Amino acid sequence: MRRLLLIVPLLLFLVLAGFFLQSLMTKEEGVTELELPSPLLNKPFPTFDLPSVIDGEPRITQADLKGPALVNIWATWCVACRVEHPVLNRLAAEGVVIYGVNYKDTNADAIKWLKDFHNPYQLNISDADGRLGLDLGVYGAPETYLIDANGVIRHKFIGVIDERVWDTDLGARYRALVEEAK
Image (cartoon, helix red, strand yellow):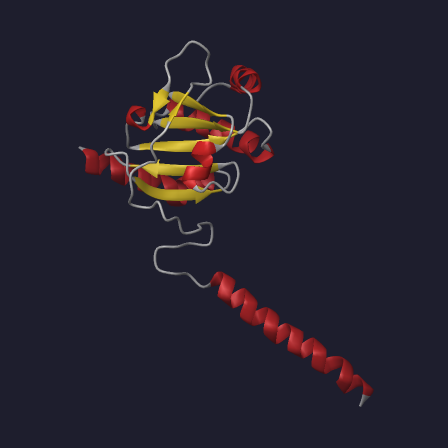
């Protein structure tokens, strides 16, 4: 009888854990395990007017973001951003258009980072106070938005872009938007 009293709570826990895991793994239409739905999907990139990370360059607005392109949220304090940065450099060298949003960071730190690790970004927006990040619904860095030729957000990816993510998901989405824009 004592053994049964120990086993029943364990079984109950396992059943509840199973339901919880199943709910986490269940896909909604158009949502994969690495995505969180965004209310900005299929809407224009938010309006902004912010300085460039590079001193002396003109201010940047949403009109400057010409797609198809990736818009990558990054920061020097972000460990995961350091992991994805070599992949972004490779993609930029292959012709992928990437814009950077340096999120809640200082320009001096960002400039040093880009000098040390190279600059994959065609434009690099300074979002020191995080206002653009707030408008985008950023959870934290890194996050990447895929915009089409009209500046409309078509996809949001949260996390590190590595070779697997590019090869199995984002690369195909990007190429499809490039083809659509022709």
